[in-house]
Image (cartoon, rainbow, N blue to C red; front, side, top):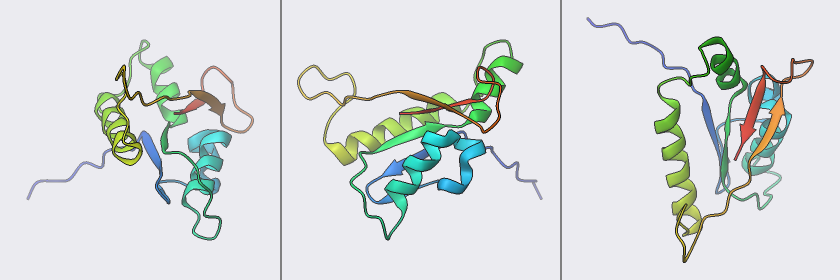
Length: 122
């Protein structure tokens, strides 16, 4: 029987009334990412948060620990998250006629070394 390797999750999506994370995940998602997830996915809040995703603080740590490279699955995971955003909004990233506009924000773990422990919310 083959053993299953657990793949670490580096991209957390939020939008359309759902979120992969929540406010208790500030060390992993950074303060902004955790709060966006909470606002987007909390059933009692029902806030109209535009869709987006957060790259975890572990991506930043990996980047500095591995010669400024990213974990292999991050590119695919980001492409999938962008695709979900496009589907929800009806817009296309890079489209000159109906562009999906994004904002990139950095955040960090509590009591963190800023450059090594940032998360990015898109």
